[in-house]
Length: 232
Image (tube, rainbow, N blue to C red):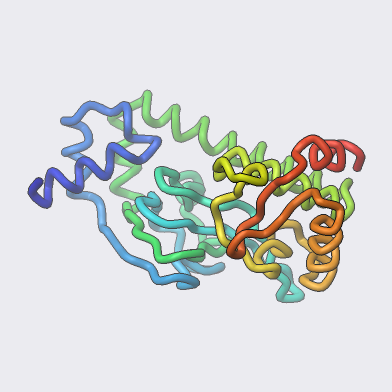
């Protein structure tokens, strides 16, 4: 497989492009810049120009916001095949969030003006982008509802059930969330302090709801976790 064919094959793995004709993908490929990011490297930061859209080819990327106090809240976890930084297509304004590689990650960059020109000639793809942005907004609204109306155990239950749908794998004890997360990273995902998060994780382990396997959460009692999610 030559380099051009390899890049086209990778683009077809991106959710947004997988149903595109090969000819369209080949036209898009020269517009793509491929870049490797090491674990914990920042892809963009608040106040950076919103002049690019990103596609995740390999790895995991988190999208977060920073409060005036300096506290971070993770808004979303991106997995391979997903697009992020897409609000640049609508606004072109400076970034209000940050994107950080959770593990070593390979990312495609597309300049905003190039991608917009490409979308203008393909209304069906433009519609898919609009739909994707709407889904992201609804997911964020759901996250904010959890933070406002649930206490920390309820937020943890909601987080684990949501991650299970994306990253769940069979495990002898139940379902493994196949993603390594530190207590601080989990705290960022539920807008809580690390100390409070650690206390509640220990409590969940003592109650037999979850276990830990090599820094990865295993859901042991899904029904009880779902009940905890619904109670708050």
